[in-house]
Length: 223
Figure 1 (cartoon, helix red, strand yellow):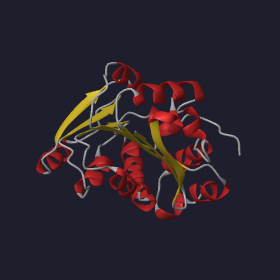
Figure 2: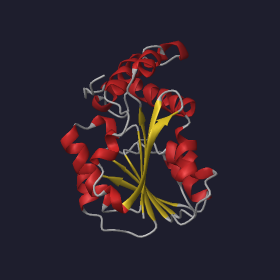
Figure 3: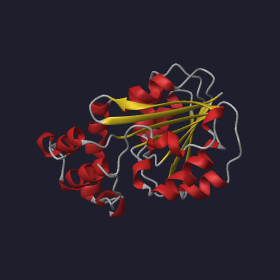
Figure 4: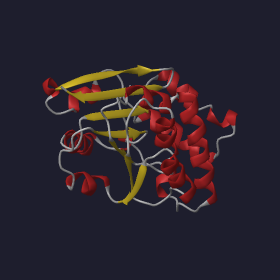
């Protein structure tokens, strides 16, 4: 199945739009089903003190990942082009002893401003599949210069995930999510596609594999 990147409806809707809000709730449920918070939590290690979430959205995915993580994260940067995260979510981070920073920025602009920071991680969830190959390679190159650990949970491209995506309406997902789920799978990843784009993999310990029934996991840890 050839990878195809197409526009998703949620990205084009105002953040306050009712359909957008419904779709974000749908995504939260789908993240639970795909166990993405668990996957991120599993790969965060105790040496990580600072985490950035690119395309963080409402921030709840990384919040859930950090709630029971075996890590020493004390700062999380929520990077997104729009502010969607609520004050209540920020307070939940603070209750965990984590300082949240909201960075409203283009991801490439934000990454370009970052310098290599020891003991830092970058997390992305259902984000990389939005990018065509050239921009995706640029993003990964910049990310590799800004962290010691990179964790990505993405859709897995394949016939079974495609079928499952076409049925998300069964669990109450709205028209936005029903459209975007199918588009996301077509733009997803398989085999070693992200490893092939990661710069200088000999300096990194890289893991790339399917995760569960629908997800694709990529983890790069600096040696």
